[in-house]
Length: 393
Picture 1: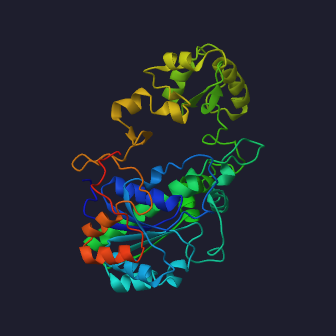
Picture 2 (picture 1 turned 45 degrees about the vertical axis):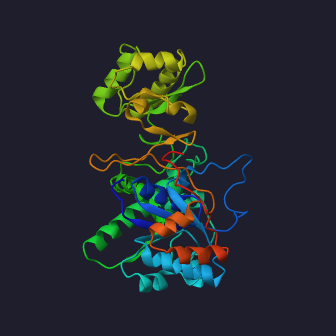
C-alpha cells in the first residue's frame, strides 16, 4: 500500500539522515530491508540513558549480516541484485572495500539506484573527514545567518544538515533517479551531501544578498529576527508567541489585535523605528498569558501562533483534525507525509529489532526455503518469527 508499493529498497544500517530519507520511502509504501550489524555499534551517535526508540527506522524489516564475512557479502550482493534502490551512509570508499560499491552493484543490477548519504560528498578535500550537522551547515554559509544580533550562531537542532539538507535531499534524488529508470534510463549513483543540501535550502538568501536585500550581520534582516514583526515574544506565564506578519494587511491586523492601533508606532518598514516597536511588542505580549493571546488571535490572519513543545504539538486542533500525528506501538510520532489522494500511505510499523522479520523479507524477495535455511545455519542473523506484526505495532 502506498505510492511506492512494489519498490524494493536495501538499506545499510546508519544513523541520522540516511535512515530519515529511507523512512520517507518506507512511509510511501516501499518495501525496505535494512542490513544491520550483528550487534549495535557502540560508538554511533550520542549515548542514551534509556531505551532507544527509533522512529526514523520505522517501516523496515531487518537482516543482520557481518559484512566482514564473505558469505554475508555474497548475500548482500544477492539482495542488491533484487533491489530497486540501495541506500548507504558510510564514508567514501567503505562500500568499495567491502566489495559492495556502485561498480559491483551496478554490474549486478544495471537498473539500480545507488543512494549515497554523506556530509561532505564523495569527493573533495573533506570527503573522508568526520563531521556532523553543525559542521556541514557552518561551511554551507547557512549557519552564519541564524542567531541574534551581536550573538553567536544558534544551533537549529540538526534539522538543516541532517534532515532537510540530507535525508530529504537523498529521498528526492532517489525518486528522481527511479523515475529516470522507469522511463527507460540506466541505473546510477545519487551522491547526496549534507553540505550541499544545506546550501540548497539557503538558495533564496544568495539571491537576496546579490540584490542588496540581505545583510550578512545576524539579526538585522526581516527573516532572521531582525524585524520585530517576524520574531517570538515571551508571555506572562513564560511561554512564547510567534509573529510573522510580513504583508501589510496582516501587520495591520496584528496591530489591531494587540490593541496598538493608536499607539503611534513607527511604520512597519522603518528600520530606525524597529527598536522602539520591539520594546512595545515585548511589553504588550508580556501582559497576558499564552492561552489568553491564543484566544485573542483565534481565527485571525495576523500570522500569530504559540510556540508549542514537542509533547503539546500533537494535541493541537489542526493536527488532530488532520491526523498529523499517529500512535505506533504506543509512541506518538509524526505520521507519513505528504498526503496522496489515490494511494494513501498506511500507518507505519515500528522499527525492527536486529534480524526481526528478516526470513519473511527474504522470502518476499525471492529467496527459497533452502537458501534461507543455509543463511540461518551460517549465523547470518535471520530471526525465525511467525506472522508479521500488524501495522502500528
